[in-house]
Amino acid sequence: MSRVLTVGAAQLGPIQRGDGRAVAVGRMLDLMARAHARGCDVVVFPELTLTTFFARWYMEDQAEIDSWFEREMPGPETQPLFDAARAMGLGFSLGYAELAEEAGGVRRYNTAILVDKTGTIVGKYRKVHLPGHAEYDPERKFQHLEKRYFEVGDLGFPVWRTLGGVFGMCICNDRRWPETYRVMGLQGVEMVLLGYNTPTENALSDEPENLRMFHSDLSMQAGAYQNGTWVVGVAKAGTEDGHPMLGGSVIIAPTGEIVARCETLDDELITAECDLDDCAFIKETVFNFAAHRRTEHYRLIAERTGAVPPD
Ligand code: CDT
Image 1 (cartoon, rainbow, N blue to C red):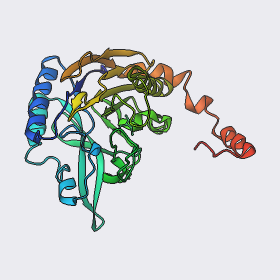
Image 2 (cartoon, helix red, strand yellow):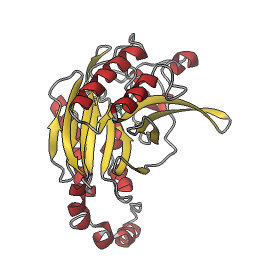
Image 3 (cartoon, protein in one colour):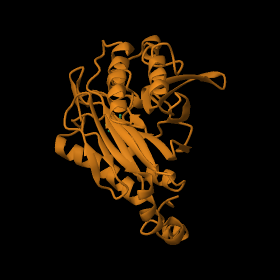
Image 4 (cartoon, rainbow, N blue to C red):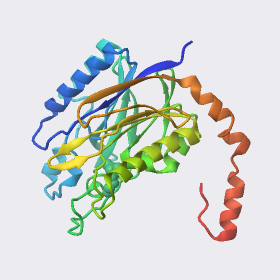
């Protein structure tokens, strides 16, 4: 059976603070129709697709904060995405702010889901690496308050056997951490889906935009190669509420090579035919974990040098 999947990276241009969910969903439905016309099996949307990146705003009023969160998925405004997935036979992944009532309390997470071709949610991931800060920081050019609005995800980095392969998800800042990919790599992941909202400016320094793009690419390409997996990284791009964000959405092969890249800062679909069997060569040779990984030596060296063991 062929293991070639046609994958779409559906970059979104800016979603302004005043835009309702319907604006985002309408644009997503358009991208899904284009993905379907190009024969996609699955399409990937960015982190917090449905709203502006609200973590740049300092808020104290809990009702205002909660207005950015989804209490159900699908809900009335997002149901059309699931209906379209079923009608088109097109899987998708979507990032959103999740408000969950669990263990007798309210929990808030930065979440991504994976939906299969029948419109059924088959996987959920909650962001682990939350960047930024929890209180208003006057030293910054702009705020990044993920630590204020979200809890650290409690679901780990699982993988799901669906769409004919082994899928994992992570979200934005997670992509910079080798552990993210390695935990999924150890479970045999073949395709990592991730969305991001990355400011083009560093709030605390004069880091140039080209260096920020380089670090974004570098992290995802290394994660792909070092674990023999496809990586699909999708931006929310352009100037949102006066704040410019990186585009550069990419589809990356298990060799670490970029096979498709967005050229605009707007709604844009790129696609690639991704053979999941291309993962096997790297997994069986240079990054054959069972044959070559030396966990016990890492630990011994770490103990001798006083460093923290790596796993
Ligand atoms: N959304 C997100 O995780 N963005 C971060 C910016 C960090 S700056 C505090 C990123 O790693 O792209």
